[in-house]
Image (tube, rainbow, N blue to C red; front, side):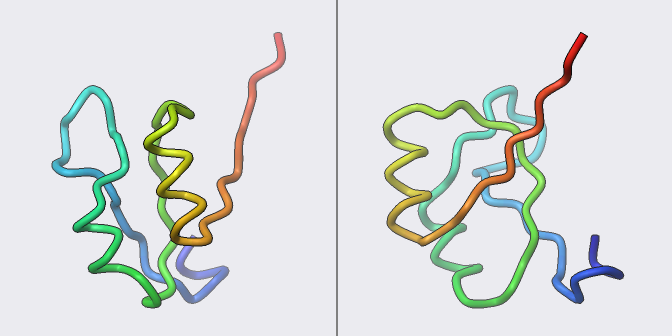
Length: 66
């Protein structure tokens, strides 16, 4: 993705290897305004949706059709 967009790859969870990759507020603050692409799997729960909205992040949702 970095070769197409010019943005760096980012990670917005607390730690790698977590089963649930919830968004982590301190990491979002650190990467805010830096132009990153984040590939991360997380649930659309109230806390994550609130952080997406607060930071103006727009997710891309992929679904697999069988």
